[in-house]
Length: 184
Image (cartoon, rainbow, N blue to C red; front, side, top):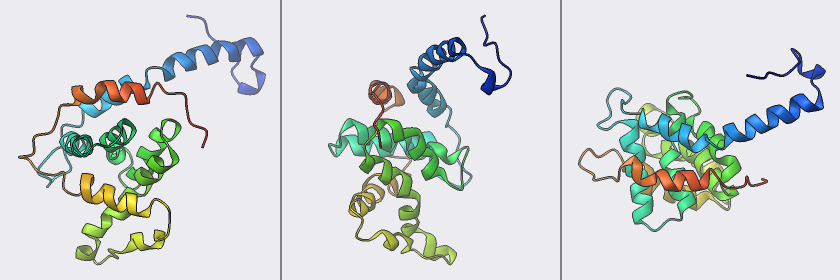
């Protein structure tokens, strides 16, 4: 397979970068497939929960779908905890970074902040501040994030809930990740 001529980026030629750009565009066009493959592997859970990370994500997305959310929010809800595996200390920001080029400012903000907002349900049990989210009061997406956590996230740990399978969300994920990136 052809390779670039440089070993240091500063020495790359226009032809090198045109060649790489073609490959990067092709690679980017398969982002949805890589995300779905990663999601399908989330069949284990952090010790103690009653459902796997995948099941939690499917329950959340199923709830968003049943509530009539648009496709962008359904996909964002499906992926909201995708960072749990690789970035447990900042999973919200990780998920938001994956979504950012493809979703609106509002959806990005909700996913980026949901971890702080979700602490409302448990922080006080651990000696923390359950009202940490209050620092965002007055923000235009504050209530939308409260609603996201209440309606889709915090109640999606039920082993008896009948969620839709990942396959159901596959076309939506593919459509969202094939969008022309937003300029935010």
